[in-house]
Amino acid sequence: MICNGWFYYDYSFNVASDWTHTLGRQYGTWNMFYTLISQANYILDNEEAV
Image (cartoon, rainbow, N blue to C red; front, side, top):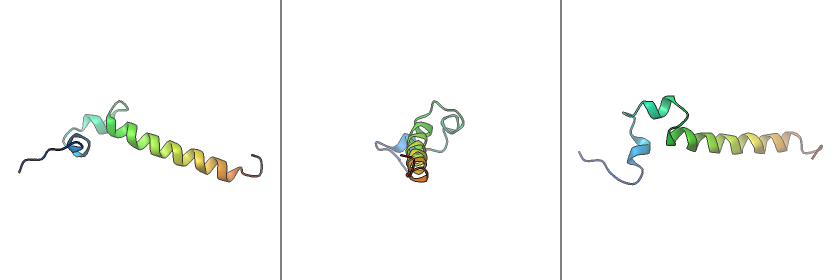
């Protein structure tokens, strides 16, 4: 089976080094979304002070 496409690299689990260090594209993507969620939760938790 031939697997290719724009996001093939992002979903290939055989590139373990990208999941274990902070320079991989997968880490950057997940870190961005969790940072946004964290900041939104901070604002909601402190809405009276803001």
